[in-house]
Length: 138
Image (cartoon, rainbow, N blue to C red; front, side, top):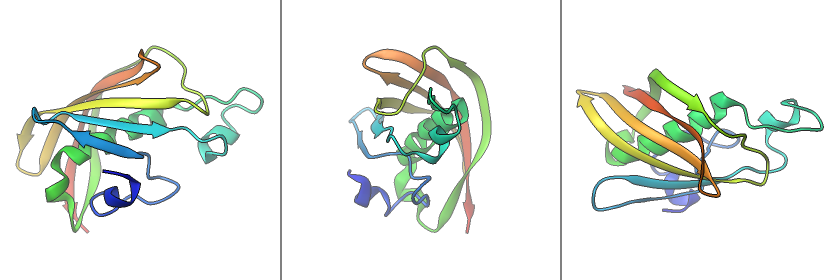
């Protein structure tokens, strides 16, 4: 799915739509990509002259990728964080980098979903963690 198709499922819009494309394989694993643009709002002040993508934004990129695992259930709902556990940051992400995310659903309890995700740039692990989110009526 490309960015326009993603808008049919994710409630996010610019500047907070942080997935450019995604494929969900036969095993139900999401493979998403997002290119960090030079003019991203979160890089302008973090840090001037040495822009670095904040960790919370890396988590949001992974979370949106996770939500796409249940894309058919999202319509008419908001996806809200329920938890972020065991997150680790291993390498810096900068403007121009292509983030490649792998996400999988590991458990579900009603409208509460538990996922594992990793974010890599050029094959190097940058961020990984366990994310949970709830689907809540708009």
